Image (cartoon, rainbow, N blue to C red; front, side):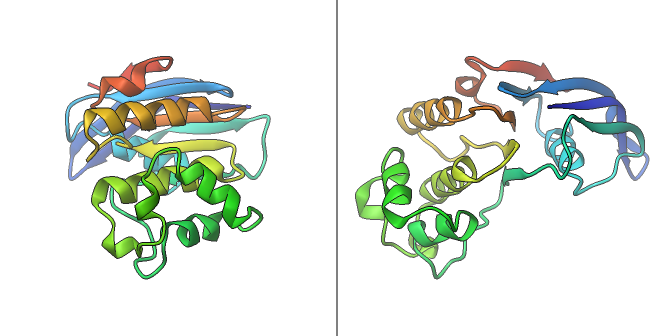
Length: 190
């Protein structure tokens, strides 16, 4: 499986945000898109997922039909009145609660498992979303700034958790944090 971007361009109000970006993304591989704030990292991720159209260029999915994405967006996308386990279960219905707890406990404290999502800190909510994506039956993991809001210790823990769980998938992330770049292809948007 491959995702091929050829000469992708995107503008907003006459301002070019992404200009002629080309890249091939291979399965079992990790890619981290780096660049200054506002350079188009989030836009590029949205174009890959089909949430936004490019002005010109192409996004091609080779050797796969009905591609399944598991995204982690910059803004929290948890159901506020559900706990961490229930939020992960929503996207992973075939998994048992005990299996989900086991995965969550790898990157969040046990004291956070039964709290409603609205009671979680931003960093803990982010980690719940990461577990939800990692456990999903997906072809591509896409994460927009997955380490934001995490202290150094938790950023290291989460970066290792993500990289250890890519499996056969393509992993594409945007990040300002170099921890995610270890073992990944670094792509710089300018």
